[in-house]
Length: 310
Image 1 (cartoon, rainbow, N blue to C red):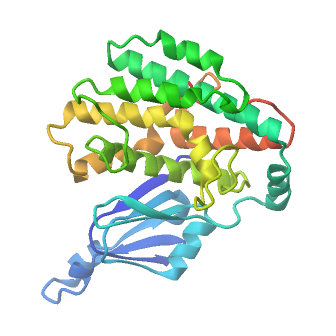
Image 2 (tube, rainbow, N blue to C red):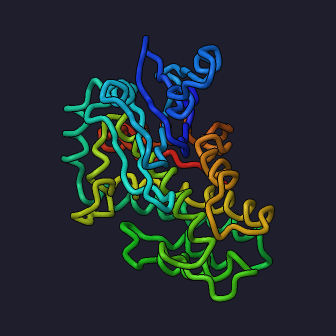
């Protein structure tokens, strides 16, 4: 089942009643000049079980502890944003699977050779997906990227990912000379930052739902990063965000600021249709298939992670 991604950009009071998220607009509810009928109509309810990601993008949003408890109990990711509307924090449930202890143990006891093989698969598929985006959106020669994908060794010992990334970003946006992928860089970095943050939340949520520790990566191991595994597993999914960003750039005359319309398009990332296992499915469902296959790799049941293919 596809879960909803909700983004709140205006002042709001969020609470819970009868397993429903209740949304109230403070300016309407407290306005004595308005008739009670209008106040009642301004209150909206959304079933908790239908929600997958909540984005809080206004400093005047109030959310009750009871609602947060209910959202987390239903494996929902809650994202908070800064004054520039960029995601800065994420809350996930501590327990998302009934067999969590067993699954943690399989993950913690996974061997280094296995993790290196899984990273090899991850980078290979990432480069292939990048190659597709580059080939279908530019006139750049991409045969070299297909060759690099084949050459990725266990653990990506030759750092082929970096070589492919340098070539990819140099050529992806022909209208932006000397574009460099940098979180603090020029647009369209702002679109990529926001899109990747939404993608990261979707992947982290799926990892928790599969009973895995999003902190313990197969490659990333920054001691200050609470979502190393999410950062690992989202790599082959990043080109889907890149493709969406390109389409936004082609339709928006000004994308230097994250307007409401642009954010609405980026919030549709969980609904992007991808192909995984020869079947078309929304990205949020595909991510669950990916993380479920990752656990099976840790448990020794299979040897290949299920990743989407562009």
